[in-house]
Image (cartoon, rainbow, N blue to C red; front, side, top):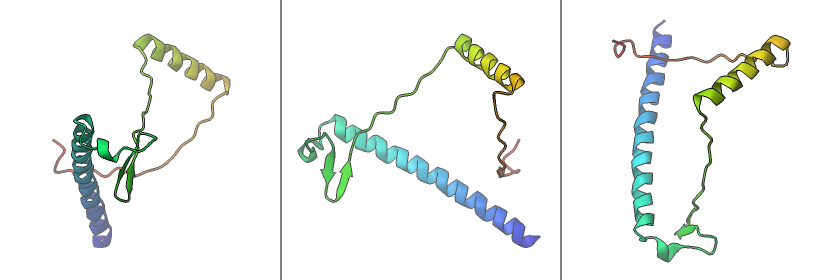
Length: 106
């Protein structure tokens, strides 16, 4: 039992490190973006609008996502439910583990 508890504890520690690293990465990316906005990396710009910083190539990439109003989401949900009832949708089930520190739960 102790081995399982130790493993769960290690998993929680790794997840905490990952959150901390993600926070650090977000701050560094924001800092880099400020450099770009202030024109401090213009000297490193390539023909395709990337930046060549030593052996590191940085390319700006746009991601587009749609957001929908409640009415549209309701209509989509209605269509999905109908497809489920008519057998046009396939149920896929996955299993994963969610680790929660019970001392944090209030």
